[in-house]
Length: 380
Ligand code: ATP
Ligand code: MG
Ligand code: MG
Image (cartoon, rainbow, N blue to C red; front, side, top):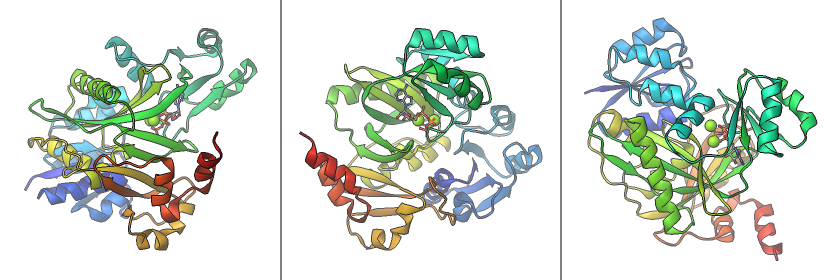
């Protein structure tokens, strides 16, 4: 009975641990919080911070393989752990994905298409970047950003100085604004034997910087889906990935795909697979991490995933569980702070019958956004 060590106790660790249990593995979660979503469902818990070497040592002694559900951990510590057991995905992938500068350099060096970008180390390099990119553009921290935190949209040159000082730590990355038709993401998994599997691309819609909806399959031309998958596969191969990786992309107005960022872990935009695929992203990930063979990524249904964000969405919980069209997944978090991901719901539709915007709002029942339906009706 192999033990899978998971660094991080969030919802991604929780759902990974549940998938591991299904396959007969035990899990050991490293987390500071004994009541974290992951700790609640794991067989074992090592209490400690991710940078606490003593905790990491104790954790490593109890596990056969290590994975992580959270990227803001020390890649050096993961390299260190890899002397005791396999770390999947490996520290070098973490090192690339947790730093936008390393990530964009990796894409550029490997001919992966991306928006124009410039490293910003000081005010003069920021002015140069603004000159080259034109306005508006986006200034982002290289580390620790998530849910759109750690970035500023620059519309006027007189905003440069404030934005530079507001975003820390430096260096930063300046990125050209993509006027995208939509955002797509692809979950790609690679096994120890080099087998690569790829789920259908999903289309993502954000609200206040946080993922709101994922539609799967992404309602785009089959040729675009195929290109998105090919891009994700080539990234997985170039990284020598073992485990799962989420690849976020923009589809621009002229049909070009630009990669935004990658995350070497299960991804919020892959949660639809939990109810639309016999083997979901978490089971695929655990299979890859455990060195098991990877079954094909079959999708038997179309799906829409909606995040339940605190506090408003979760206040509707009684109505959500009473709605027959909503398949809820709850993360066991007590404090429904504003903007906190408390859970998600999936809606399943027969294969090939993903509804349009209005149909989705209709199926969302208690979670429908009236303003979206309104916008659709009043559109010319
Ligand atoms: P995540 O929670 O996905 O990790 P993040 O904080 O790392 O988010 P990004 O994914 O880089 O940030 O950006 C968040 C969102 O902001 C994107 O999903 C997209 O909607 C928008 N965005 C980011 N970069 C650009 C860009 N260059 N052009 C247009 N929109 C962008
Ligand atoms: Mg990100
Ligand atoms: Mg993102």
